[in-house]
Image (cartoon, rainbow, N blue to C red; front, side, top):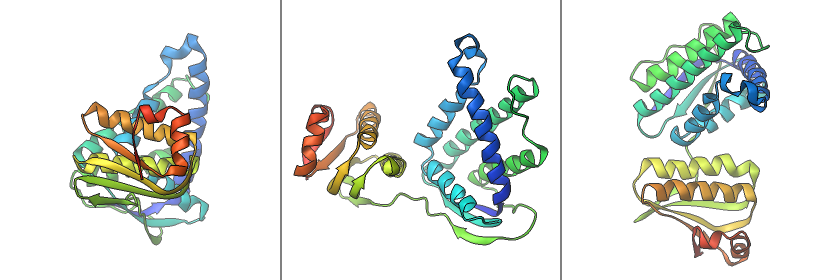
Length: 257
């Protein structure tokens, strides 16, 4: 299915990101203060992590919306493909909406220095959640009131995932480092959620992998084995030494590419 965020107000989104960053900084500081740890809504990290793993496209969607800010767009019609069970995604987004409302109450109670979400940003947030949750449950899109924008197609479906017969193949190429970690995690997660087949990560055209990418592989391995599925890594000769030095040959299903 496709989510349609019509006449998406980029300026409001940019200000909402800035406000959220201020709140997040305070929450990070409070977490360090063990005497106040119990008063901090720690579920923020847990829910965002849950969205990353269960809502294929969530992180890539946020990246695309952020790119509109960099382009200095005013408004945009954004089309977002959603994979997997729509109701499961809706439940996760409802949890995030409710948590942000709780954080606002934290601010109102004086628990945080950051001011409560301004009325116009609160209106934007309510519209955004209404659109996402509503459309996931079958409602029609309703545009943000205001000046029309330019149509932007948000291509968040993972690239390089193909049906390889008995297994789904995730193909990568070039050098894989921190900047590729989120995209790679999305691709593997898409393969995990959209089929019950095993997955082969084909690294035969990859020149380099860093420690962050290796950690993505380890996390994926744990997720697959937890449900009795297999993920194999097809590694070329020049990369095999990296997997050996890090001890991953004995942990992951590493095969010669």
